[in-house]
Amino acid sequence: MKRRTFIQQSAVLSTVTLFSSPLELIAKENSNCELNLASFIATGKKAIVNGFAIDAVSKDPINANIQIASDSGFYTKTRTGISQNGQYSIVGNVLNEGNHKIKVKIEADGYKTFIGTIYLTRLGCRIDSQLWSYNPDFTPDFIPKNEITDTLINSKFNFHLVRA
Image (cartoon, rainbow, N blue to C red; front, top):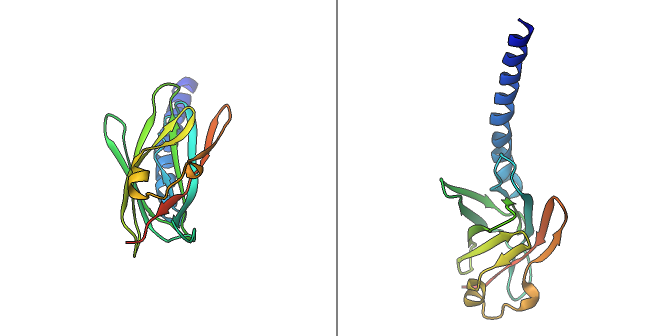
């Protein structure tokens, strides 16, 4: 009888934990523009990309609509948020092999819409050459700065938006 009670309590605890964690992440998403693509099944390292959507010339932060999408193979995850003072944060998982491809779309009043790709790899955040097509004044100094530990990849990257 004790065994049956223990199994029932474990099942309830597991179910509550499994379903409450993703709901908390989704609820927090729009308030601070944390766009979370991390799987609630922990695999690989956690990767975080922090930065700002800024004006390419003045370097001032821009409030923008940011949409990211990731195709995991089984389904596509899409997250959308409005950056406050230009600040955003993207959270994902990185496996030891391969990369996490994330499509990014940024829209802001008075600026050309940015559509591009970033990659979360075991070596940090990487960018696609689309950034140079979007902003010809984009320099190698603007590429992501990565800090890597045993359990976390922390990247800093600013999207330089061009006026329309």
